[in-house]
Image (tube, rainbow over all chains, first blue to last red; front, side, top):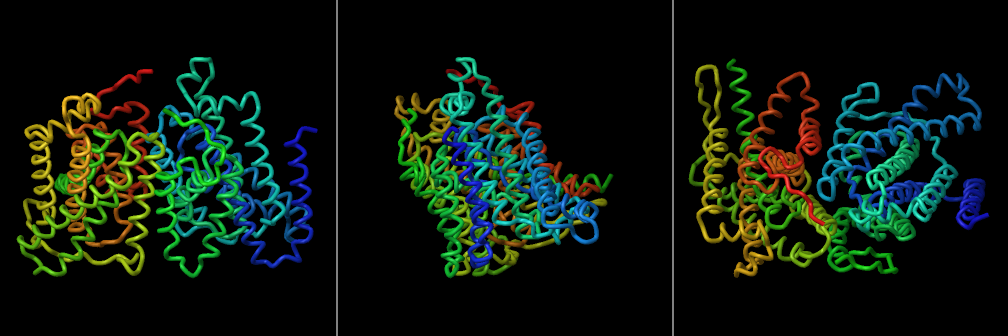
Length: 313
Length: 298
């Protein structure tokens, strides 16, 4: 078996092993670990768009909210009828949860397609703004859908998210993104990032690459949203605003754009930091933004990117 | 009919504020070709400067109103120049994306610094009524003196800007840098001075916008700039980014449309309308209403 597939298998076994012994772990650490896992999925999927393909998207939280809402809708509205009055067995609940997550992921992917096809004709600043605009529109729409709780949010989502599912989807997202960009097809993402005009000149359909990256990124953002909703048990539209998108973008930039390992480390670091800095929580965001500026001035290739790519002229 | 005129008037006074902020975005884009995300927070700082100076002045006189306006404009101009000097100048030749990220960083830094309880705090504060307030009845229309001040000051500043850009030496230099920075340097334009001046000018307009906004919506808080800033930016794109009359036109259109939407049954979608306009304009006429379409050369 090829190496990445072995690694995936090992990760899945590890997930199974950890979830088997999760009763022995302090619930606080389990919660922190779940938070880390969700952020890693978000950061790795955004890295495919922002890092590898070089399309600066500021609407990742929008796709996350689509996934969170649709997955929560499945388990809140369809769940009781499917599971029956007894609530179903653990296996049935997990099967329902998997279905809900995939529904969330697929609807986020569809949203990604709908947003991506028109907006990916734009570049740089403009693309950043349009994705930001779409993210805000998605939020305003959820605020106005009374069935999903409106501005107050959706409550009473069953707590299906377990460490097993989080680790499984972390492994899957890392696997899909890594294999994709290292495949023959996936070289096109890097080519689109490095020089779009040159890539088009050698016959690559760069628009298609951008849309594929966008849709896959949105899919995993939707999955992460589904996990998040069933972890926090309540979601509000304002939880998925511009600031959330920025938080994910900071993880990608800090890790070094187009560097999966670095991005994972950055996601872990930035999830742990507020836990450690709880006593000075009011200075956390000041520190974040300051870090962002200093990083861009002093080390634009990211904190964990040791392989220096050739600088663009 | 009188309701229509009333809404039109409200829309124009909102649009005039958007236009003032949009001018800053457009001028910076004109000389540096990048979106100054921190501009909306300079607007917020303007309102906060007004909040502090307004408390030390006698309320409700034209004199103290003008002092507050001048203080906010001067403070914001200084802030804009400092931001450019320390955050953007070192990245002058870096890829656009890095500059964009830095701009987002500066924006967040300003927002969260002012949200800190030792600086300003996250809670909204009441803006002091620095200008005298009066209501006029004209036919079926109700016109507040604040609306007249907003429209008057905005119009005055735009005329002044037009004069600076087209009739002075530094304005000529600004237009030269905007056309071609390298050629401008070759004929002896000091590009650093021009860029600093542009930032100062744009930020001063944002500061004035902050005061005018706070006069009509008297609640000052560190995140107050985000939404008007985004909308002003949309206004700048709508009119054609880099184009000064375009920014004014875009601001007026956007303010009017938004006021009409919020007066209709679709009022909860008020914030989404601006983004919908942005998306439509970028898809069908990315250069904006008054902008010139340019072909990218390899």
